[in-house]
Amino acid sequence: MRPVAPPLRTALTHALAALSRGVLLLLLILGATSLTSCRRARAVWHRHSALGRAQAAAAHRHIVRGRAHYLRYCALCHGSEGQGYAADHANALGNQDFLAIASSAFLRDAIANGRPGTTMSAWSRAHGGPLDPPVINDLVAYLRSRARRPFIDVGPRRSTGTAEAGARVWNDRCLNCHGTRGQGTGLATSVSNPVFLHAVRDGYLRHTITHGRPGTPMLAFASLGPAAIEDLIAFIRSSEHVPGPPPPPNYEPPPGLDRLIINPAGAAPAFTLREGRFVPAEQVARALEQNRKLVILDARATSDWSTNHIVGAMPFPFYSIEEMATRLPHDGTWILAYCACPHAASGHVVDELRRRNFPHTAVIDEGFPFWTAHNFPTAHAAIITTP
Image (cartoon, rainbow, N blue to C red):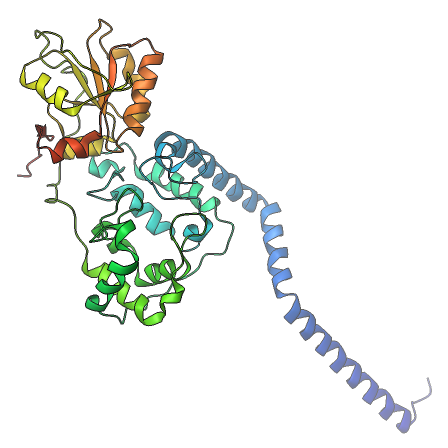
């Protein structure tokens, strides 16, 4: 082969160098513009790999189980699709703005520990509820699967506001819906519950106040300005409280239905029902005082029964009707149900019992909060003492 002439060799060298630079530049451009595509490609490959398929199948099983648990325990108040406000203004768990800032840890804590002093029960077995950690994890997986937006890290920044200034903003903008101390009303949920406030960062409150919850009664208050929002956060933190004294821990588990009938040798009570469905609390208290024969069912979660219940009432949670209805007396004994909603869970129990041919059934009107507010007799489960 004949050697390449120096001028031609130089030209070829420059051309190859230029070509190499061009290829390198092209690769850099392609790499910069297709990084997301590469990630997607890896994700697609992972999903189609044996490991990826196994992990996807396991995640799907978590979600399917979680939805079943949700429909049993949560849908009554939060709605079958998480739309919220099905009972007692329970919040919209399927709201995309909520899911965007509610971490899995936040959801897990809310389900397990509830919101003491509100109608949100503590569902974990540690509090006397029916759910163990795997079931709670399934519920969280289902709720997380409903998210259609990327998760927003609201950040750890603490409020720079003052509670005194925040109180003025609160009284002007928030009091009518959330109550004087954020305890919640018939229009909005509590924001001063300590379990809630211990679970959220100031960034969660800041984002919620600023952006609101579109599709719910919670409006956006960005127009207040950053300083007023910081003051509001400081006021909310300063308002932390539980209505009434906190319950002592370590209650014994709820009993069975062997002591179901109150005063089994007593005469039948005479009730006057409102709308053929609701019995006034005063009539029930009088029947107890007169030692009348009746059954009172606590339709709330068993953890709520342990903390406080109508004297003589037995736990009969709304989510366990099938396995418990067969143990009820079918002899015409009056069977009353109550909850804290005030009529959602108890109304569901009465509807189901009437469907099973228990005609002498009624809802205790206005629920447990009305009962306690009028100082009618209550009790709680025995407390387990540690040696």
